Image (cartoon, rainbow, N blue to C red):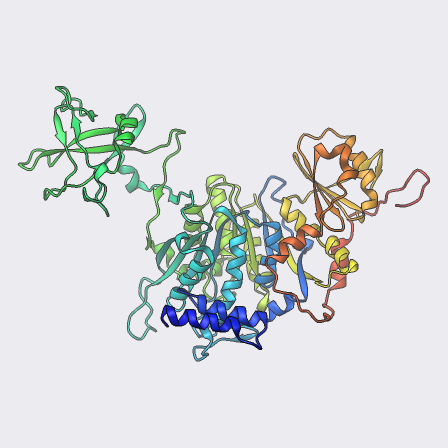
Length: 626
């Protein structure tokens, strides 16, 4: 459709009678799309459920693995639909995730993708629309979770690579595209393909924002290290040509980067000024004589001139001539060995996807999970993209390879990375595979042939499932949301160790308020505002070096600030449930307008979550219970 016809239709739709405002806007949105991916949104059952209920996280303390100690990273495993779990993470981890890796269903049409409790097969005319609708909802929340320098890696094959790249360009922006890595997943080639023996899959990489300040790098291998064969006072280095050899190498491309450099033939030092000492003139040009340009400006060269030297090319031949190179040092100014830039083709033999099945079999036995990703693949992804205190999320966790890789890498480099996994429990996957695999990795296990594998003991793992609170926002439901918020707040603040609230030698009951502490970090959750005066007295009586995060059950955004005026310099206040509701409003689907049906809630599970570890209470001076 040409531009003029589109404009005419837009004006006509604006004046049409009989359309609701929403219908009119939907039609205009379709017509205004100038370029991109268009699909029909297909509501999911989980999405319809979220129109009626808000998710919360409830810990299964019986599955907690905490022998790693208080200083070990606290990894989190969430059992539930990932759309529900991502909603809760939109409160606990908005802007906190450094790296996301996901291995979503490839939508091959071979019963690998379930939509609304039924498989989507290759004959389904809405096959791609359903998949895009499913992925779009999750990726848009995922973007909110990423930190400003966060990145997402997505495994995919030819069935959806084109659609996924366009979808990610729509969600993250096309300028946030970083790379489409080719993974040699099957070196022998798939013989089931009709025309070609397919040997590869893809790893799509996008950042949250365009041009992020991120360095992707891997430790140098022996071949890399052998290139650094020179050494001076600053350390080992290699020589890299200063002339631009890739794209835009011509003088006309960057004329200001075409200038002469003069060499002292005795010392091989360089200068921008010709003199008796610096007598050899070199200009950037190709061996064929075509004029080129340098990679550095004159300003940068002047600043780092001690790192630039003259070199003889083809020494001892009739084609001998001078050129310019720069010193590329092996280590940083802090003495750290520099990383190697990551290539876009990954062909290591360890990355063969068959290895994933073998590895899982050695940990759990046969038939537990189809097509797990190999540990080497996740180790490489995490190693090249994270720092030692990064937070990693995988919300299509499958067999849990991502957490295994995080713990393995921490053991290798002394890191303290934290991992969050999300998966449903269909066919017992979460409990019997994801959890059990990583439980054995932490505690140690024996291979089928009897080889003992030492556990990665310096890790804690906590298991959560999704619970729900109705979205009616009645006083009763809002109070329930506050009561059930404790586990989410522990995850949010990464504080799990309970501590007493002592006021003049008396204890405040946990049904009124709870306190969590680790080192200098501390959090207090107040369920009953009537105990605020006693919490204030508790804080006043203590020397507080770092601000305490205080969550208060309050109507609206006012967290009883005036009541805390005496200790306001020692605390940071936050009103709940409003803070949770605000985070949820950005990601939950629109609530149903009609009266909502009751939501099924496991009362026994909620009661278990709210039970205090001990049963002490707070009494006032007259002996009455608070």
